[in-house]
Image (cartoon, rainbow, N blue to C red):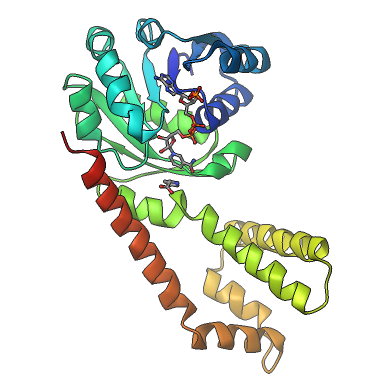
Length: 274
Ligand SMILES: NC(=O)C1=CN([C@@H]2O[C@H](COP(=O)(O)OP(=O)(O)OC[C@H]3O[C@@H](n4cnc5c(N)ncnc54)[C@H](OP(=O)(O)O)[C@@H]3O)[C@@H](O)[C@H]2O)C=CC1
Ligand SMILES: O=C(O)[C@@H]1CCC=N1
């Protein structure tokens, strides 16, 4: 990617994306990251060879792409401080903040900006991210490609055409790593009750999830068929799955995802007010 990219914020998500970009061939000299403290930046500059600065406005001055990667609660003051530089430079602005509408950030940045809003997830840290992206009407096809390349550096990308669908993305991928971690916790606890050492149980559960995910990704069969293939008639898996269905696991998952999407809506109301 030849564009000059500036990351406002240099925390977990920004450093994951920058690491992925460099691994996929981006020149470190085209990347700048900002944060309030020199010390954190110096570590990042040393590790990745990128430019760093504590001056957000200086970092935006020659950027083609500006990625907003600060916490939602401080986004307004960060954006208002950047307004003049962004209006002068007119970069593609990509926000990865949860809960903040593209329109709100655009307004804080002085309006009429090409804005992409992205909902990533934490497996981006290890290159297995899943991101949902939404673009406003100012974003060109070339800028869409840039945003796709940026997030594909740390995983897969799915575009949505209506911003409200990012709430569904939050429910199915943004928040979802935690659902699987809960499953690992529960399986480990149950396996310990069945007599296995905790460490053995954890390794087996995690490897099984990795295997199941890889199979589901590589197979041309749907998940229902793959599930059926594990279930010998009258066997052990059939008994376990019957128990999960009887306990309404599907309803629990649907209700949890609805609660997640509802919370995303409520957060948007809290965060997007004047
Ligand atoms: N974690 C997750 O699962 C997900 C996170 N997100 C979003 O990603 C964004 C970043 O999250 P994450 O990386 O986890 O957070 P971090 O706290 O790890 O990173 C935030 C970064 O912003 C820096 N910062 C603080 N104030 C400023 C400022 N005024 N100017 C420039 N930089 C500043 C922080 O520096 P310092 O540490 O010195 O304060 C830090 O480097 C959030 O908006 C979050 O909603 C989205 C989806 C999933
Ligand atoms: O829990 C949260 O609010 C954030 C957004 C998606 C993942 N973490």
